[in-house]
Amino acid sequence: MKDIYIESILLIERLHRRFLDVVKAELDRLKIDDINNIQTLILYNIGDDQMTIGELTLRGHYLGSNVSYNVKHLVENGYLAQERAPHDKRSTRIKLSEKGLELCKKIDDLYQRNVDALGKQMQPTELSALNKTLGALEKFWSDWINNSFKFK
Image 1 (cartoon, helix red, strand yellow):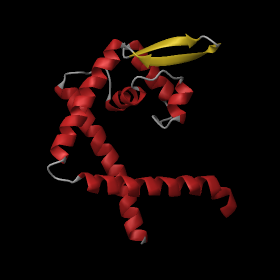
Image 2 (spheres, one colour):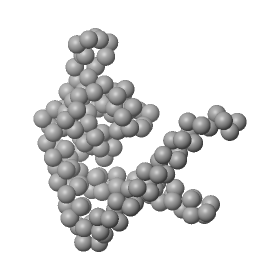
Image 3 (cartoon, one colour):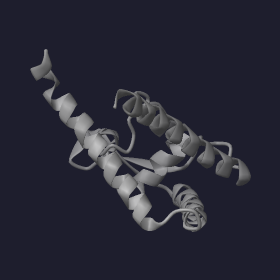
Image 4 (spheres, one colour):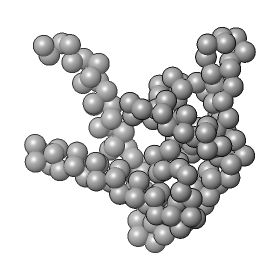
């Protein structure tokens, strides 16, 4: 079981890196060089929402330690609009600009092309089973973290 568990962890890491390569290849194909693959995924995950940087992290859309840097870069390059929250002038809210919305549409097109191609190799039930398994692993890890103080 341990070997299978470690293989799963390594595969998850490789899959994440490979998917980032897919997004990077699409940015290169579109000749977009003022944003990177991770920043593109941040935009895509924001979508039509408006949120604070803290909410972006809490919702699990971005887990990096330099989210403020990436948001600043996205604002400077015109992908995000940033405004002060009306109820708390210390807090800022972010949302996609027109440029950000246009890029998200292109990434959504990439996802659809991926789905169309993947549908020729894999059944929806197989992907659903994978999602269920990955969800169970995520829940296991979350529970482990939340209960880790019990193991000390």
